[in-house]
Image 1: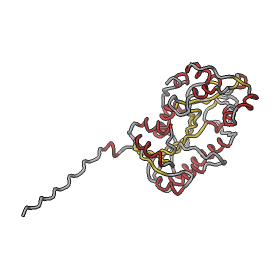
Image 2 (image 1 turned 90 degrees about the horizontal axis):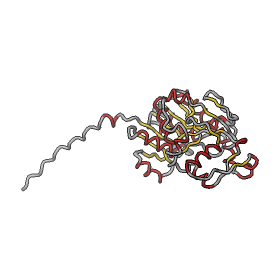
Image 3 (image 1 turned 180 degrees about the vertical axis):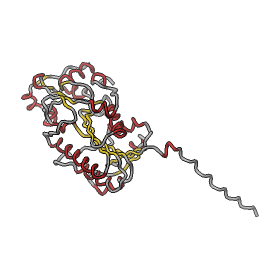
Image 4 (image 1 turned 45 degrees about the horizontal axis):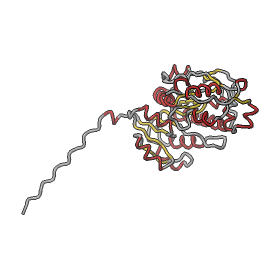
Length: 310
C-alpha cells in the first residue's frame, strides 16, 4: 500500500512592503473630472476610496486604481460605511439643484461623525458665494453675499461644514472655485460655445470672470489635503484678469474660430437662457495671494492664454 504524501506546511505570505501599509488613505466624495485628476496627481501614493451612487461607475473607478463605494448622499442609510474609512476627505459633490440648504453635505458629515476617524476635510465651494461685486478686486476676507439660490446652497454647505468641524475637532478647509476649464474636460473648453456662436456682452456691459485649469485645481486640492489650515478659505483661481467677452475673443483667436458676436445686456435678456444670463450678471476679480503663500502651489497655467493651449 503506497505511503501517503506528507502534507507540506503552507509557506507564509511575504510581508507587505511598509510603503504600501503606510499609504495615506483618502475618501473622495464626488469623484468626477476633478476628483479623477486628483487621483492621477497622487500617482498611486495614496489608497483612495471614492463614493458613487451609480453602480455602472464602479468598474471605471477601479480602472483608475480606486476602491469604489456605493452610496447616495440623498439617502443617509447608504452612508454608514463611510465613518471609519479615511482620515482625509475631499468633498466635491454639489448641492441639490433646489432648496436653500445642502442636505447632502449634512448627510455626509453625519456619517463621518459616527466614528472619530476623519481628521481633515477639504470642500470644493464656488466663488459665486460673493455675488456681484461690480468688478472689485478682493481677497478671502470679503463677506459672502449670494444673490441666487445656487450660491445660497453653497454658503449653507460652507457654514454646516465649519460648524461640524469645530464641534468634532476636524481641520476643515474650503476652496472657492471659479470657472474650471481644460481641453480634455467634458464641456470644459470655450471652443464648444464658440462653435455654437453664442454671443457675449458688449464691452460697456461686460463682466470680469475668473478661471482655473482643471489640472491646477487638482493640485490645489492635494495641497489643501496636506497643508490646509483649520477654518481656512482660499481662492482657487489663476492670475488672469479678463472680462468674459475678452476671454472668449482670446479663445477664438487661439482656436482659429470666428470671434463671438457682441450684444447689449438688454439683448442678452431676450436671447440667452436664465442660467447663462446669471453668469453674465456677476463681476469679480479674485486675489489669489493667500493660496500661493499658504498652499505653496506654483500654477502650471497661471494665465488662460497658456492653459487654453494645453
